[in-house]
Length: 245
Ligand code: IPE
Ligand code: IPE
Ligand code: MG
Image (cartoon, rainbow, N blue to C red):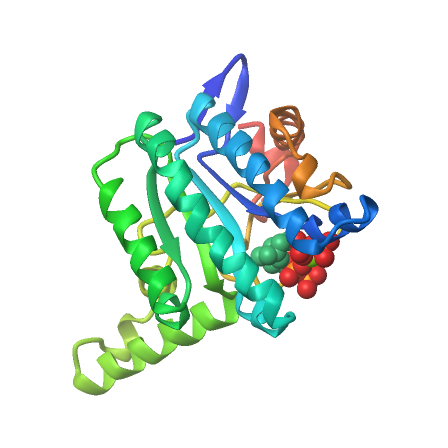
């Protein structure tokens, strides 16, 4: 159930496509990595904002499967930024009772990055506050494919009967198992596409697009997104009239 605060419904799960770091840096005549580094402050702000609003889940799209095709220097820069950020932010995550998890093909990350991530996940595992989910080496198509593969293996073994495959079972084999679908998706930088994010899970999510570039994203923008969400009529296929009852 989503919570109410100041007469507003607070989404239980907010997902974010943090976009625009490169353009932010370019506008300043700086290297792209400077934009990524500056984006960390926005991550801090939105995480803190979600803690204050008592959001249950915040999923941040940090690195897509397709992002490996960027210049090697940028990929390396992003990976070391990830390690450094986990190091510097861990005490704050603990203080704010944030539980860190990750979705994506984590085996595909460099061993050092993977190890560091697992240590932080383990350290925060008993925290009872916000669930911060990092989507790393993630893509929606990857998620659906890996779920499909496992279901096929189980079906061949006989542990899943084909007639038992339904939407609930599918959800249970996705990397977001036990995480409710996002009610609100935020994408910054003016792009209006999903870029292979949570393809299954976004089936009925409300989309908030803003021109703000990710490094400039602050709590006030998060609040605008929540106001927008509150202005939506979520019909789930029904008619408006049906919702009045
Ligand atoms: C988002 O910013 C960060 C990642 C995809 C890792 P971009 O790096 O995509 O920034 P733009 O879109 O080039 O401005
Ligand atoms: C999406 O941003 C991926 C992340 C934010 C991690 P991109 O910048 O990679 O998306 P496209 O390529 O513009 O669609
Ligand atoms: Mg981009």
